[in-house]
Length: 452
Image 1 (cartoon, rainbow, N blue to C red):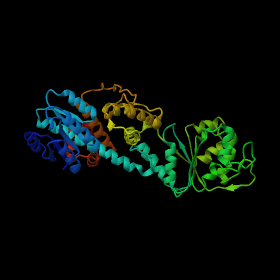
Image 2: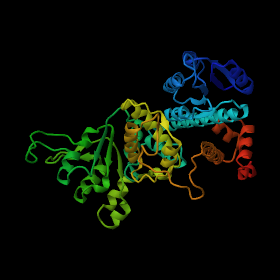
Image 3: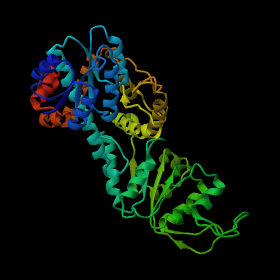
Image 4: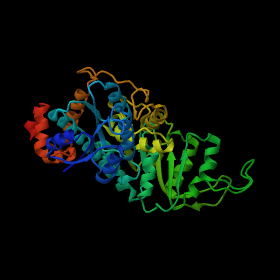
């Protein structure tokens, strides 16, 4: 059974909750010290926390400190704070610090059972997302559960086992270099160099010598023979980013290298054999460039022996939330920040935003949000995003309505992701099949009943 930690010094309330939660393994604590000890020992999914704890039960100081320590040690744990009737201020403060929800005394068994059950369901959903995110890391740092990105990752994984020249197409900021590195890291060349060069960032008159190297005396300032990027990638992978920006005059020399796998340094006369794998990328439409004669047709077919189209972030369903949580963990450590997660409004805003700058834009917004956030969770305002009204209904500020909307969406997503298999959908959601049917009835998801 799932663990539930009840932190309350009132033995009557302890007894009441013990009999209310017969489906849970309930453990108790009377003060902050014993609460932390029980948290470490049992690792509960949900904690109900009375803010009025000894030695200062008349105030919320001990409870607030306990909340901060619980979330610091176990940030994924859902904490439901319990307060007195006239203590709404401290309840809201607890929510700001990262508590999942609050409940005001006197205790009503049916109501608090609903809160705890929903908190457990949310914990299970988030845990499933984390597990799926780890499982999706079969291609290195490629993160995402959407069908579009998984399809591309599987294709890249197959390509990695060959030396075929690969062309990655996608908007700026979609992670083309991440894909290139993942292909390299999953190939037989993984222990050899990965060399990247951005064709758009180097002046036209220098790009040739950067790629092919030069002999001593080849031009003014060439004081010694210097190998180019192609040579330094010997045995490994060469990543040509933004190949669509390569000057037309240099494209002929690049074509010969790709066909013959030999190069000549600038100012040199001897051919140098090179054994490397080549991955190219661009955000440009090479078909249009070929038609406009700004990109060689023969080079286009040579670099595009196999093409991978990387989808923009706006077409990746809920991947933005997985990516945001991954970056949050990374930047939180980098900036030594205390932010532990995202508010519902922040998640909704991220899902609504079109992300024209793709993953790079998400990274930039998260860095500033983590630095600027004043509470334990990132708000939509911290991200510089606004929550827009849905077409069908206005955004609700009622926590119950927000949770119900999120749960019904999650149920629909799991149902269709599992190809209308109720058992698999229940497993994805982390609930039993009867519980899933009960939730479908509760939220009146009649179209799911027909498919079952």
